[in-house]
View (spheres, rainbow, N blue to C red):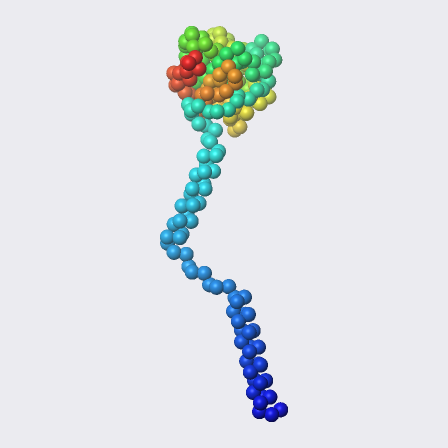
Length: 215
């Protein structure tokens, strides 16, 4: 190999090695700059915003006294005299205040029922009816005997109504004290679910929601 051939071969090797180095460099990812305090803050704000949107999409089932757009769920009930019926029949002829209660043995419930009986005339004057529901099949009759109320009481022995209305106390397998106002088309316009055995709504709030339906 003469000196010209040697020079050409050296040049060829130089070009090949350079091309290989460039190829490896292009395959190596560029190091990312460390996150700054500003970028970290922006990411945190974005996460909070997403969490806030999720929270708004899932309203608290214990929401108190606020209008709720939604249909009242139907469910099988049993009257105090043992007659089966569908819950939707309770507001078929007009709006109703629906009270879920724990049981005749609950002192807070008995006091509430006596207060409700005293204001039954106001409910009727507002064009509505007052009804109450317990999960115990025998409770409506016992509650009427203990309190002397003459509005309608019903049993929810399958617990279906109490659960679908969001008033079920799963720990004790009874109802949370709860009050709803339903218009004549089955829309819930007022909802209050108590968080404890003595947590009851101001009846004036439920009555105001009922009166508002009259226009």
